[in-house]
Amino acid sequence: MFAAERRARARATWRWGGALAGILVFQSLVLVAIFWAFATGNMRRGIDHGLLEDCAFFALTPPHERPEEIREKLTRDVHRDRFLALFDAGGRLVGGNVATMPTRPATAGPGAFVTSVRPTELPGKTRDVARVMICPMPDGSRLLTGIDLDDTEEALALMWRSLLLGLVPGLLLATGFGLILARRAAKQVDAVRRLAQRIVAGDLGQRLPVAARPDSFDLLCAHINAMLDQLQTLVAEVRGVGDDIAHQMRTPLTRLRARLERGLRDADDREAFVAVAERTLAEVDTLLGIVAALLRLRELENHERRSRFAPVDLARLVEDACDLHRPIAEDAGSILACEISGAATVEGDASLLFEALANLIDNAIKFGPPGGRVVVRLSTAEGVPVIGVADDGEGIAATERALVIQRFYRGRRDVNGVGLGLALVKGIVDLHEFYLRFGSSGSDISIVCEAPTY
Image 1 (cartoon, rainbow, N blue to C red):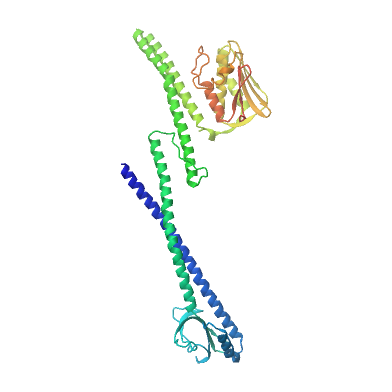
Image 2: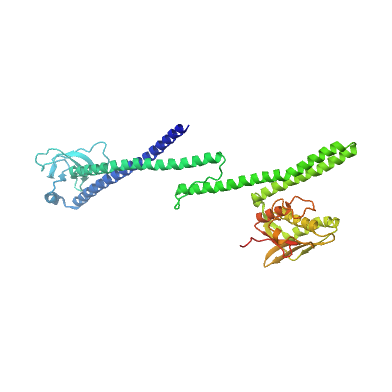
């Protein structure tokens, strides 16, 4: 298996190397072709520019002075690379160093063209290749002007040899760098592959190395690491929810089973069986409440409901919560008072905020003394809305305030509950980026509708 993986990595490296080397070689060839095209084009344009200047000059020269001007220009041509000849309308040579008028090739376009000429002033040479231009003169005669291409071809040949000499090491360097870069890329991809294998095996703590000065791949590794951090957090939360459910439901399930077993054994008539069933349903409802609360907390921690945020009228929210809980308070022998000073609006989820406030009121009624008073206040402190719930009870001790917002913590065992109410309130408050504040006596808790400052 390991040998097969090594062979696969080697093949991948060579494929990467071949692809990168091919790209670099192709780039080098394209650059050489572009340089060659520019060089030959510039030479051709330079020659044509000189030929057009000759045509313009002789077109402005009086006809009887043209032979003398041709002779003078040829005399100044010390390198013997210029061709100048004037032919009359019948094609006879009037003056110059070309014996006959060449024929324009059929494939040549307008303007200058390359052809073979018969020089008259180059001893031992009956034919020569030149780039020429034939220009009609105003009097009907025609001027032939051209440049010998021997020096141009020699310069181009030298340029081509120089390009080849530079291209060969360039191609070797391109191939070498391509293989080096491919090997590096293959190692990086192999690191990601090995990481994926370890994660699939269950090791979620593995991370990719990131250089101090990250390149593009290091930035990708950083994003992958951030994704793995989030994945590990989510997996831990899911495991935590499962552990909480398993831990908290073990005792109720054991108690439920014992109660059922004892009730079925002791019941001897229909009424007894009905009583056992009713107690069983009450226990099942408690268990379902635990599961629903845990799933509710999981949803809040994942911030899945922030997209539903809208303006919330806190005054109406507090009034609705008070109206809903007044009958409950009266049944418990308590007095529920609602104090609203001013109007306030925040961005949030109205149903979640109502649920948080309802939990606080329920706790105040549940843990307050019989016949006590529960006060729900909406006030504004320095422009920040604050919702407070206070009762006449002993309050939460300072040592327990960090514990009561944790799951399943129950400071008192003499009341019904599973210890998830304040944890749910804390999750809703965190989702809205608000914070909880305990009063000095611990008997009042406030939701401060702004982000906490540390």
